Image (cartoon, rainbow, N blue to C red):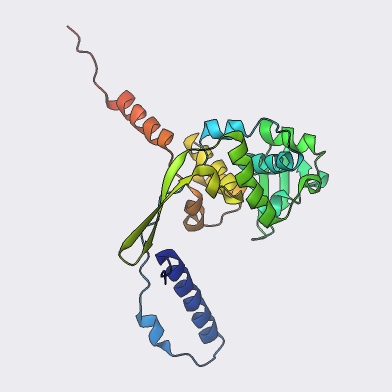
Amino acid sequence: MIPFADSTILKNLQTLRILLNGQQDRGLPVNRSYKKFKIRSKPVPALVTLEPDEYRLLLNKVENERLEKVRKLFVLQCATGLRYSDVIKIRKNHIRDNHIFMNSTKTRQKLQIPLNDNSKDILNACNFDTSTISISNKKYNDYIKKLCKHVGIHQPFVKTSYRGNKEFPEDLKKYEIMSSHHGRRFFITQNLINGVRPEVIMSMTGHVDFRSFKKYIAVTDRSRVNAMELWSKTFGKTESKT
């Protein structure tokens, strides 16, 4: 029998603690000795996100009708940072002064997102009504993988999970892990790379604290190179004057 991954065990323990805390808050009998135990979190694995060149592949129309609907929704997520539950409910009355105004379905936070060229193109194409391109969440995530494979997002990488003291590496292609979360992650990561302050991005994505926000931040290879190029530009060798 293959044991649960450490991340699954951690999530189950955290859920159990929330349940026990809730029972105690309601005055129900709970053995409080559970508070003595600390849940040790494991190091967070590096997050995977789209690279700019991969995103550009998604900007081109595809012939398959279903994949084209998925492409429009996914690009709209990448260009706005909206969750799936919000991106499928955009209507004309949500657009004012070149912005999207809506309340987040999940958090009820007020969202105000300026439109850019990519989001404008998609919204114009569906007449500012994303119900015309909506698809169920499960099918949407399945078809995102097919879409990314179709356009050529094939970068190989190794996904490593941990079970106890053992590593379980798995060779994958990037399209195999793509989902709606990666659209939101690309929006956040790319804006950070572009120098947008975190609090500005959080005002568009509806995050209320940095702890939940940072779960969507992926450090890309390009951002590492950019950081060192900037370092060299600032502190690099200068020719001595004679």
